[in-house]
Length: 208
Image 1 (spheres, rainbow, N blue to C red):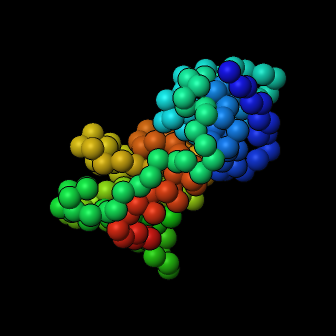
Image 2: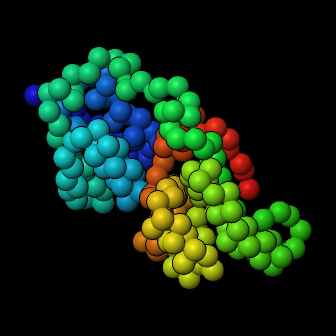
């Protein structure tokens, strides 16, 4: 059983997740201890390890946190570059609908009048479901994350979307920047690696 220690304190997203990924895929680590200095990184590393089948514990250490992931030897000994292959994005492989990913990069739509921009964004998010089954992901970054917290004018709408099966990605670095991590009420706290991967899998990405 191989243990790898990673000190990811002070590293920006998605570096802690990328270092953890390398330890598993390139070094064959079956136990990974990742030290981070913020809650968003701890959540991102934990979720990544869980997605790879590792059991996860989080320990407090001074002002930081240590995410401990434990997996089987089969999980840790995957050869370098052996990430699960992605099949072709054909209708037979993923249903008859295109995958559309919408990136929400602000809590307002357009430029000019701030009040009007806020109203337009609320209207857009209430209407975006008209895309039907083609709407595959909503990703919130920068000030867009403010729409996923308590008090948001579209929180109930986003929660309904999520309950209906729509995956909502919320940038953890952005939440931390605005000191909103504890106030998030919709979506999954995520990192740039997840967002980039989702872009790769999407048939179309719309930036708002």
